Length: 236
Image 1 (cartoon, rainbow, N blue to C red):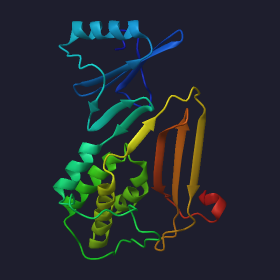
Image 2 (spheres, one colour):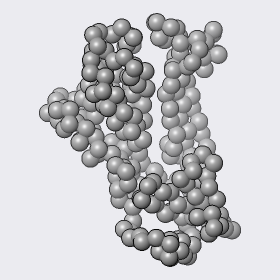
Image 3 (cartoon, rainbow, N blue to C red):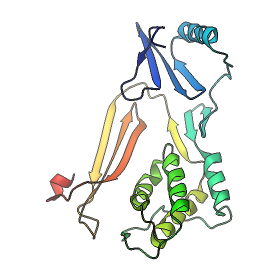
Image 4 (spheres, rainbow, N blue to C red):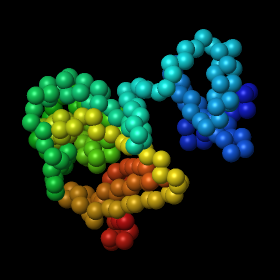
């Protein structure tokens, strides 16, 4: 890719891009799966030809499925979801027939290190790991998953119950995802907030933020702060 004049993204070394005049072409690769996008049709065609000279490749047409993420196009925009991934997870855990809940975690929960008796560590880590991957298209469960991921080293029954609640919440709408609309602008908006010493055990706060580009959500995160904040402004 570098020999073709493409540059490697500093934030992701599997992402390459080429800017020419007012056009851009982007290639993302994961093992033997490749996505090519861009607004320069001629460059996209040329890139495919160059790749064919070096490798045996197959053009699958418009993107529909990539690493468990489903892509659906409609007049409103492009929708990214992980419906099949979520349904497979529910089926694996026996949750397909459960009654769904409206929230992924209890309000004002008091989960701590000593929340119940020890449970199967390997199973807990596997479930939380799969939920972390599901956060790629489900920002609504990001906070809940960040909470249960804190106890991977020593999971207890209370932590596992919180994981099951997230799964029960997914049952309500497993196909929920992200909608990317063409809003004719690329304005960048960011929002952040933090609770104030909400953890009753170490008095540390949890921060959350999200960033919109062109009116579409592109980045979000929820994370417990590494140190205790001395006052509300410092927490935020």
